[in-house]
Amino acid sequence: MPDDDAEENSRNLAALVVRSGERVKADFARAVLAHDVPPPLARAILLLNEPAPMGCLASQLSCDQSYVTRLADDLVKRGLVTRAPGDDRRVQVLTLTPAGIALKNQLAQAVSVDKAVSSALTPVEQEQLSALLTRILDMP
Image 1 (cartoon, helix red, strand yellow):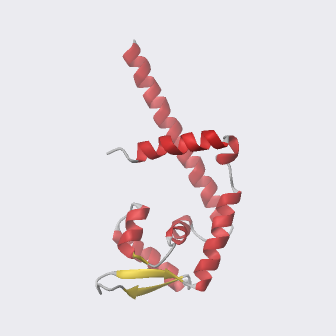
Image 2 (cartoon, rainbow, N blue to C red; image 1 turned 135 degrees about the vertical axis):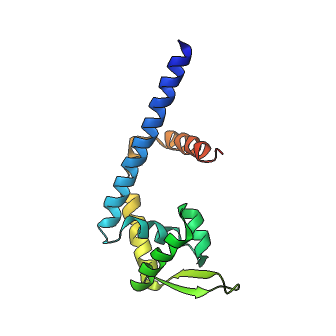
Image 3 (cartoon, rainbow, N blue to C red; image 1 turned 30 degrees about the vertical axis):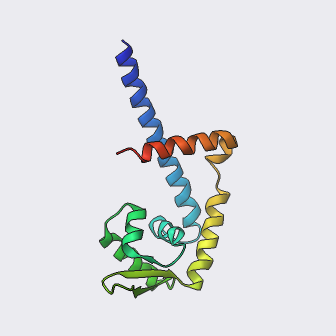
């Protein structure tokens, strides 16, 4: 029954990865909601390190560009980003405003303070987990 054991181990591993992801996602939501920012907006803000085309942000968020358009509309309305044409006028570029930069710093601090995952692991284990998760995410 080695195949049965391998199949059960595979199912258990998949379930653990999903449950871990759900926990991290819930912890992230709690941390950013304390700043009155919905998690999707917080993710977008945290990913904007420099002016970025909306298509690039869509790739980083693994979502459709129309969804990023809605996020950008909300971010612009809140005064957190500006949206302007890029060199190619078909491309819209998002840039954090001073208020957006300040909020990004607050969100980054809130997320780093909430160390539910990293506090349970040694630095070596954190590196190992990071390498393993990267391998999983890089799979075709």
